[in-house]
Image (cartoon, rainbow, N blue to C red; front, side, top):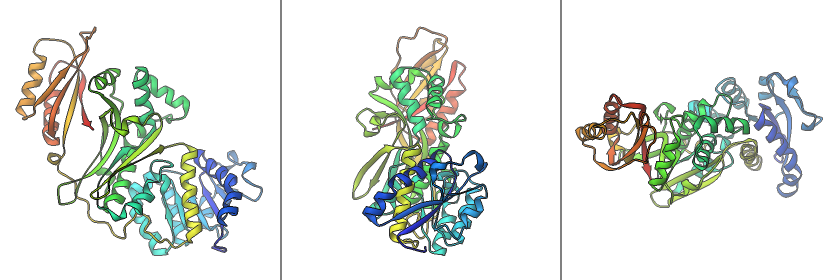
Length: 434
């Protein structure tokens, strides 16, 4: 850098978050100079079809260009902020910037879930910083906490609500009794859901974030493919009614935890029925929360806005400020550790949980008997059966709660249950979480 107190920023991506970041730098520039002796300035902005994105408010001296590579390697840029998202060209541009000796700050969870170790190794090789706080949970400083604050403890689990779109849909369905499709349409109108919401509602977005969290929490080379995903598209209004009967609420949880003494990890994204006493049950709308459990320190829960231009821009700027304060050479590895242990997946038999099974059936004699027989054949004990007064006998919902059951036994039972002839919708299993 030409001056340790002055940082000239090259921005890649001028969409919602990129514009929010630029506005935030302009807004906070005077305060940061006065209080922290930091002079931050966006000097170059790269974006596809840049003529549609030019903005006079960004500053008279800003260079707008659709040549993204020229921003990544510009000698007049001290630090590159990548807010394009996706794998390419983001990967190539970050590689070019790091190879040129420039620190990089990003919010790209997909890229770091797939190629984070490769980019972190390049940053260490070149002796430059790599900031990715905004990649998980918006403005919640969870990655910095894992990298620094929790380094003194051996962590046993990291979990939470990692997708604001799914949480908005679930909590709105719960509050209003409306259908999934209706609430999804509202989320899209409000800007909480994309026109194509699949990554959010199918659990893929949360899986990217969970893989990154687990990698940092456990110092293990966790592949995204190791995260078992199920989305929220199958939820019905009756699921919320039965959850209330159980004094619980549906929440889409991403969970990574150590199983046994060999360091094996179980990772999943799925809808849990969470106890109403839990802090996670209080997280509503487009908010996120992350729970970290350590052997010595116990459990900590961090919560806040998990998405949107403002919270994400704040997290990006926090990384920029950290780099401006400390200089380009990082004091801590970007992903928290210098080398990662090999990944070992926990056996499904090692994951044990109480479960609620939801059925929607065409009413007929012998349904409970057939279900009970299959569960007994798989050595699964029924805890209770719940059924509200159903008016539609052609599509009658009810719930069977199970005593704690191993994942492999539950999977075999669900396969056999799904083959029974009376279902109007496939049976769904919800883990019960306190």
